[in-house]
Length: 195
Image (tube, rainbow, N blue to C red):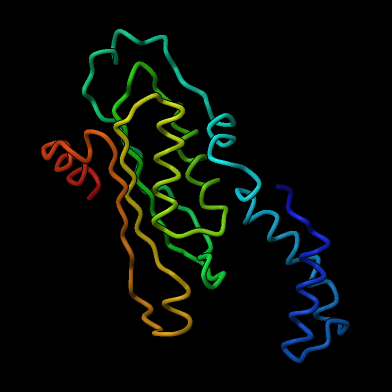
């Protein structure tokens, strides 16, 4: 589904009026257009399904199959910075750090693609828990590995800027698939590397 910039502009103008301001004053006259352009950027992931994201970033390397064919080695990328927006309040989720791990199954994904997947999944109205689930699902589609883990730590504007106003509260979520969910030793290794 494409993002409708003109509708966003129309509704932002309406919000400015509802807030009691004049959308025609100098400081606000271009605000609806600026917000629409910003939304097109920060919500780009809304335009794509998990399957489409998997297709976009499906770059794997299979030439070293003899190295990874029987391997139990884990590949982990951590400290991937992203932002997202909470679907409940449209509030910013920020200072988010994502770690993605998988055990190769005859394919190794290009490292930059992991970061691109994480970034694109964050560019949606989201729940932090769903971000982890979506990333894991896309990684499974691309790598063919059922052994995927995603750990996310982040802060939420809906907790820090409004309501309870707890500015230091951090939320950590884990999505553990395959052996990461069933093998205690692998689970321990994952969290030792995560720290």
